Length: 112
Length: 115
Image 1 (spheres, rainbow over the protein chains, first blue to last red):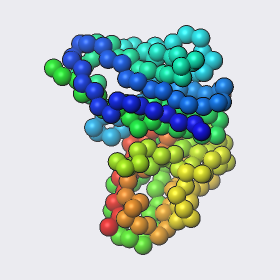
Image 2: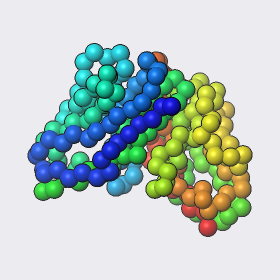
Image 3: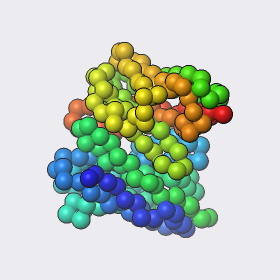
């Protein structure tokens, strides 16, 4: 069965430090996309970064990078130089042709 | 672009009433998704359209829920009759389906409260 696990319900990080949010997944389908979304307390869902299952290089978008280890089935999000505005829920998601699955999320709090 | 537009933003209704949520996807996007988010169950995919055709509706909770996409620029999610356990935030999202994994852009959500 296809499943996403985010083992860190809540995390704290000092401002300006880097933080890694874990995401592991389970699928036997070779073709999929992996995504990270941010949901601040205001409630909107914001797309952050995407990695295709056949992509050889790890995706990067500004301060966000995705550490993709296909053999280990992990797609961790790395946020460099954390800012107070990074405090939010972060969701890992996996998309196939006919299905989208979201993980339970990790709550990140950035401490000044 | 205006982004994904949802209406209403908030809806309060009494149990047994019909509720209709509306969504306008981003122009040019050909995939549309309806999600429900609750504290207990997290973010759940209810139904997914591709080129106005439902691809996966296995997440629709029961027959009280129905969704339509009559054209590329409009979709509705209807609950009839509504129940208190339907209280949640309902998100609509759209994406451009070129391959199987286009990123989705979410609307602001509709917060539904059924009393």
